[in-house]
Length: 251
Image (cartoon, rainbow, N blue to C red; front, side, top):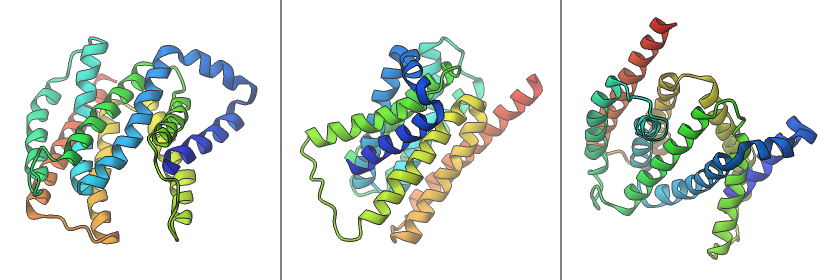
């Protein structure tokens, strides 16, 4: 609850400084797609925390790494753009890699944490699709609204706002600096970069986050998870590299 609320506050301050009196007009210009993106953003922040709370970080990040493929499907369904052949070929391999990795947990593939992570991945990809389709609009306000929506939903659900000793400093760092900066850059990057390049850069999160989780909090990475993760990362890198070559050739 604090995480999403601080996200909304920090981004709202940034937008107020950037747009000043033009901010209300910007919010109105986002229309219904802005409202949908705000809801998806709010749900995504909640689902991510729930997923990490119930599943290993490596599993969650591997499932989220499938977002570029879901985004291609959403683009096909919503906009009618044909899904690239490299995406259709890559998806089965990526899905197999994820199945191998997440199947290493004692609860198996259908563990609650994995299911929640999948829902988060679908929501994130849908949100990225909206951002890319409407790249003429600044969708950063939807991330701020999503933060407030997530905070309100968790408050209504009866979340205990009490903080434990030592929580305040890392919470402020996460909610006021790391999270808003990451979300704002991701939103802006979705407007400015080709989808393959965005996917290639995001694949770095898939590779680094499990290693950081193992280093910082001592979370173990099984051999099966390592193999499955390597497959997913390799598929993402090959997929994105081929896409960049297509963009370069076309240009």
